[in-house]
Length: 252
Picture 1 (cartoon, rainbow, N blue to C red):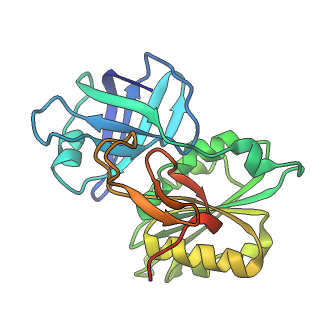
Picture 2: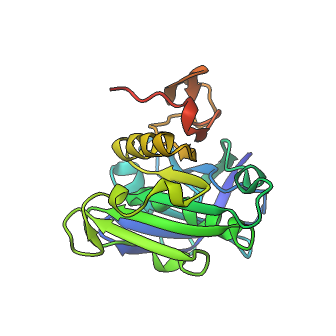
């Protein structure tokens, strides 16, 4: 982990309120799929950086897919090519590729994304390429995004939209059955994650969750992103964001 200034290569809107930013990775530090960085523009306000999942790592660049929600991400969205920002990372515990693949030959892995939860899956799918048969089930409120970026690395894609504008109408849990896979990996809103965990539990299929939480420090010091688990309260930023689904206790 380090903190340094990075230069923006591109920063473009890919859907309403959704942006993709690529920066020059001059440090070229080892990065695990599922890890994240803390990003902040050089503006004085807001004070705290924003945690963003790593969307992709390629050719000495880092790409972040993010949703504009508040002042911090609005500032990020306003950055243009050549401008600099302060980035700290990589942070957190990412996906264990060897643990996902195990001893199986080309295990069947399903990635379940809810909205911006699709962000960490491009780099994960790239890392799993040729080691597993990867499928994607993605759910959105309306028109999907970031799907084309994944087509090179996944064998099958199923999409659900809540308004029925694309794919199956309804929630993403309608478009897959866990029994068809060896491992299910999910990232998205809490209700979706809870449902996926329960589906996998009933099907006795290994399930891995990439958790989301509001963060301040990103290094485990402030305890602002703790979640309930079978091991007690754990920090999403330092102990996660990747957890075995059996460990996570969702509040009713």
